[in-house]
Image (cartoon, rainbow, N blue to C red; front, side, top):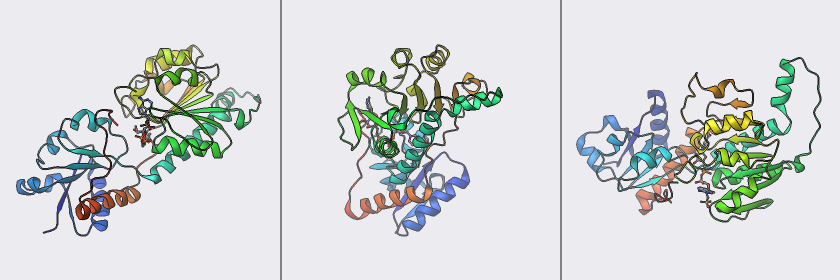
Length: 314
Ligand code: NAP
């Protein structure tokens, strides 16, 4: 009998079909089946499941799970709802996703670097006003989080001539990037940044990291790109920092509440560019290949890929 791999999700039906078709093609020896189609006996057999925003009550009905493979990179939702369950959580680590994110980081860094928000405002006031040009190597971009996405993004910025620093929990060595680690290094580093790019995961230690005290340290004219998670910053403190001129502009792709409610003040603030969580969408094609390879390796060699550190939350 082919091993049954449950697909546990809260996704629209067309997306479920896409994932199941794509994984089914790559794993012809397995039966990739949406959770709702499993019998009780089949649920009891599953030792690995593929998950996409799974309902904890569904996952709890798979008593013999050794691990779950998420099709997404972020895991804070699962940390909150599944971390107490006795199986490993493996997230998506996809080089293609890192490339897509690096492209977005470069695009929006250039948007800020070349003063596009300001020219947009000038145009709406029919104002012909060239601003002074600053060379890329004089622009200091600080990337918070040097994981798969942060490293690729930092290197892409270096390739484009920016002066780049990065910050992570443990020390890193990256060509052309000044790397700093640990809480004590953060304040000095952000005080020298022209653009801050957040690519930290949301964990108990990063939640609310960008608060009033954080924004007060920024140098005049600094801007922010938040592509990590919304709750890493405190929205009220961000708005205050913009209003008080501690921050010039913020490009936000992620929010505490998504979709961003129509009533949110973030939509209407002239110092904010709102994006609908599009900086690095998962590619079903490349992600399926990675998930399928990991499952194949588990089935043939009994190896589970590196999993999330539940004590750190990422
Ligand atoms: P990752 O590989 O897990 O890297 C996380 C990085 O953050 C690591 O460098 C880690 O340090 C650092 N870090 C974590 N906690 C820290 C702390 N308390 N202080 C300092 N550094 C800390 O994650 P990733 O794959 O690069 O993804 C990063 C995040 O991007 C995801 O968690 C997700 O939230 C977000 N994301 C957004 C989108 C989007 O479309 N907007 C798409 C995908 C992902 P160490 O290296 O020392 O462990």
